[in-house]
Image (cartoon, each protein chain N blue to C red):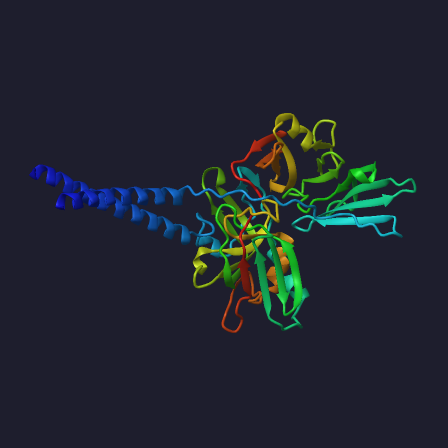
Length: 208
Length: 231
């Protein structure tokens, strides 16, 4: 009887010890589950039936620079879009202009400016998949002879299993935050695109 | 026989000791997490007004240039604002689900904007009061790839309640090192665009007096309600 009780007590003690150890490690290495990522643009054109021109203006987070997107509807149904930068140093500089059908319109994301206001990114809403263009706010060439870099094209070449769902903003002066889904379905990882060397850094945590 | 009994007893005592040790470690770890400072390295230093216009910051492994703080401009800003005419109560709501902030005076919406709450450490939820606001300070924390050092963090509004003590340094403040508002990014504080933090700083109570303003019985801090869970 005593022997059985002692055996039970030993077993209970071992079990309790293992449970306590598991609880400690669980508390230390708890992993957060990903949730469905939100997408959305901060600014969209709203067309008035009588107006042929609209203008959208986004201020940098420090209020020193503003990006203006002017949309002018032409008589043949196309939309001329012009991007302008205005800052304390420059009155108004035209950075980019394009003619487009309504399927390829530019929109300005909420977090368009890099934290140091040196760069900005815009989204081009094409029929099949969007493009994300990064440019300099002073209008100079970004690299060599090119004024911009298109992130989605570079990403597709490198990561065939993922598709970009959104580029949400900047994690640093040269790091854009990219969220992805798996092409087969399900949430994918987040990446940084490093503008300084055009490389992608896959992240262990997702920036929902 | 006696040896076997002794061995069994030793085994039992060791087992009990390991259970107690495990439980103690578990409780200590939970307590540590619960009382951690928002800025783990600069903890109490971050609570004091500090300006350094010569240092460079570091965030996500990148060097960042802090904004230069010109204290003479603060005085001009206060002169322009003058005294308020609306005396209704002010209240700030921070929704962690949508990563947004709304500030009301009575029923009037004063401000609505996006924020970035805690990613590496959760922003505490509940009802808080602003106990101190400072024009700028330095913040430092994290470790390894997550280490950050940020001088001249602007427009800092510290909040606390009986569960989250003032000394832990949670605050709403301006942000010059990232621009990903609408998404959790911080180590517990509520990051705001600098233009939004400035506007809120000049509006909240206690009324700004110099670069370092404490709330008082006659001028208590604005109430902040933080709710929800960051995605």
